[in-house]
Length: 423
Image (cartoon, rainbow, N blue to C red; front, side):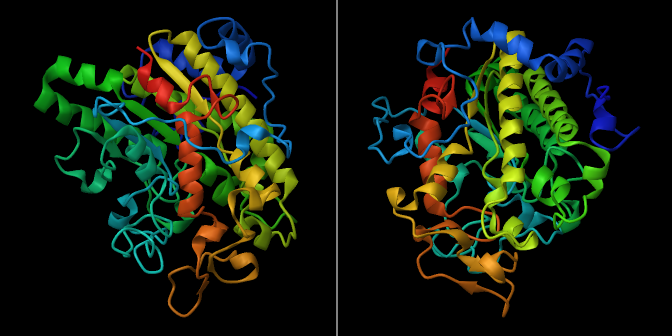
């Protein structure tokens, strides 16, 4: 499949803008798809590889049930004795897994502004987080030593320690999630970051902003909606519109070329520490199992997800090889959830099939918070899923802890704590 330009790849031919990207940046966007594996091989011989991953098979998505690295362990993360944050700021890009309230300001069905969302959040009220309580963005900020970054659409002048651009139902492609209404697709999130950078320059000056951004964390957790409510939006009996247009491999390339292009834009604006989260067990979501009438996880979907994650890792390595002045890391969003599904008792979970809140089989209908339509469990901490597609607070806490102090293959080559210390 011939790589397309950025506008075509996002499905908006003739409307896209390169935002002044140099030809070098666009060239890498194409190269990263066509020769990711070749560049990754070269990168693995350099700074991107470390002794602990040397010689290991990069196909690290064989999730055996006996993996001791996934068993609950006491955190090795020590208190930051200096009391200063690990990063001066954190900028979060993504979807409802990270949204702390952007969608509150949008016209969309993808909102979490009514009970029982937020019932376990401090204060017990919904905030726009798609969970029973705190989410990954909150736990990430806590580990860093910063307050949770505000949602961009409500941030105002509160931008010095970071901003959350994540938006429920959003994806890498502009079209993803549009079935629910408005959202902030990744391209829009990057555009909004440019606004934040200008505001920072007005307050900190050119050099002050440059220093802040090169030390800050740029965190991506995006791509789930491109599959769940776009490519996989079918009962499995007939292909979706995108499945008629793209093979799984072609769609994977479509997503990765767009993702890399957006990361390239941020690098051009001063980003230097970038963490990208792989996709989770999308074939096990209550929503997917409901619409496909599946009793167990849909392995054909999970196979596609695993292939995407392997390709994503290779593309991150390609970025590292092309940008030695920046530091990139891959965070495995699949392994822990997969392990919990296989051995729920290891983490104290009792239900890994159904959402705590919702309706229909597996509570797979996204009716949580719609009055008179949903049922909700008493103790969400015993559940893997909060609703038809989102994890519970307990799961988010475990995942971020793994990203913060985990080792290969949960974080390649650095966990987030280590990434902060890389100069």
